[in-house]
Length: 247
Image (cartoon, rainbow, N blue to C red; front, side):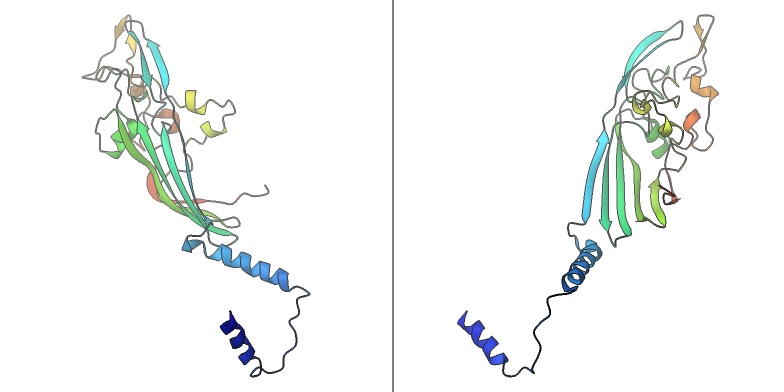
């Protein structure tokens, strides 16, 4: 401590005459503004402006059917792209207006109501998402990457995302459904799509698969019978979301 005091004392005679510091006025306001600016612009260095959010849900259901000549009940998930999942969302504030981040969503596939009940699969319906992601591989219990993309977002200019990303039309009609039944009983006809149609007490048959309801509804964009939600499966691409206007 003595050495410190001596150093300060020795420096005083060498200094030119100065006026005392003015602590009044806007000095503190300017200092606080500068500190806030530095905090906002150093997010990339890993300070408290970087966040990681882990979210998701677990969803299963009992699906029962009776087509006349056959009936059964299965415990299934709620359908590909809506199944049980975990989502990791990382975000960093770059400036007051700009932020950047990354989203990774993993979907856990159990018996899929899209394929369960089919003559070939019974209660062990393979995951529709896994079929698309793995070139037709039939697996009942699986973990697949549903979304994996990074984004840049501005409150004024909007959001740009790049990677394996949901299309803007994905679940577009279902998400505005005010019934609150999106997960347990969504309007997209995923449930029972593989169960055979029947006529005059006999199940209609095609080679190896029967004649499922899904044969009547087909999405050329995904090559799957998803009917009301043809764009539910994510694609590799670039997506732009405009900012909110007037709200």
